[in-house]
Image (tube, rainbow, N blue to C red):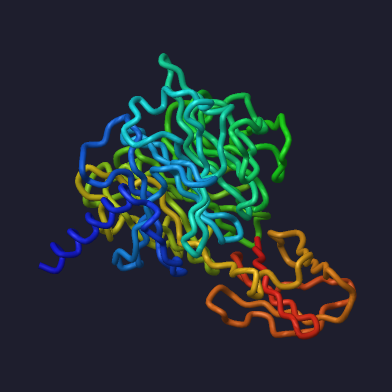
Length: 459
């Protein structure tokens, strides 16, 4: 009876979201929870038409916390954001490097718009959605000059990634890689970063200060790097990472990089969602060994030969990587503590903690964003405070907006102190503690009576 009642309430809330989106307000996300994209409300079979899109927040135990309906009616600067019901590569979900936002893509097209991918982007703009940790949804970023379809050839926008929500890198089934500032209008041209092959890309991500894409076309079947660093100008060269096949093989979608070896510079392990059937499909683990990426093993499902995984995201603590994955089989959470260049400690995909249900599908997945506060909180104190480089390897420079003494301290995302408060050195550099694990931390900077908090990422 309880499950029946819960499902009826959920169905009612989804229906209300479709009819009256302004009446549904999201709650702040809970750090450590999972967020998955769901396409469809269960009322009709999925087709190539524009379909309502939702973000579902779950606890790691699989308890549904909330459902956020993305706009199906334009309001103010916010556009509609729908997705195709049948294009399985769409709606990859990423989390910004600073952890503050979830990012996904879609289309400015009313629910029911037929053959969505064949529409022209100038008519039905391609949309980048940004969702803050407090649940605020922003769909004001429009693309009118890329990822455009025709009646003879459909085109998808699939994925976007961001450092801090102020700009995005977007990919899809054509056009290559685009740089798009937040709030771009349809009349504003986007920047073509890379237009050479592969122009058909499935996912994009930012790790270790570099931009990467996943593709399975032409001679690129795996992960490729786009130029060097996070440039905002083109043209840039897309270079497949050494070791990945240049012919038919992997079918990669979302990916997550980790830095698990102190002997290898930068990120050295990547987990990739591969939607093929077992034994090749699942979550692949690759390590960078002597300059070449090597497959360590694949985490496969024991419940089905084809979980069709397309979403994956992770968090790293020391040498343990916590992973979330999503696909046709449902939503999964697991971990790998085997470390660098070793067979994953988990070799079988566990039972799904949640499924999408009838006439619906899970797409991308990510860990919940973490709040950066409001203008009255420490995250916005000391405007003009700059930290660089960020991400950093062993130290970070703190450039104060005004001269004067200051103290600094470092905490992890659980609030634990990892660097005790100390005076900021004359060279304004803060050295990370020896052995500090790669990940996101909170740097506290106190000057006078004001304490500012900023996010820093250690490579």
